[in-house]
Image: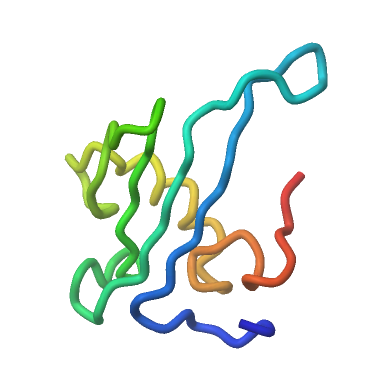
Length: 96
């Protein structure tokens, strides 16, 4: 992406997670996926589709609207609306 925003439709971002093992990464946790959809999919939440993969299987999937099984994803990503709802630009993640 080289920092160009917003992300184009069809962009897919993945974030690994790990269980906290006394401050070090432990066993793998869920894999979180964001897919940028065409304009109008969920315009309130940047047209992102979210998914959570657990043990290789889709555990939750949906948009960011209230009632969606992954609404908690958009609730957090709303804080970074300025970078197209992504914590970073696709080249550098800005996590604390």
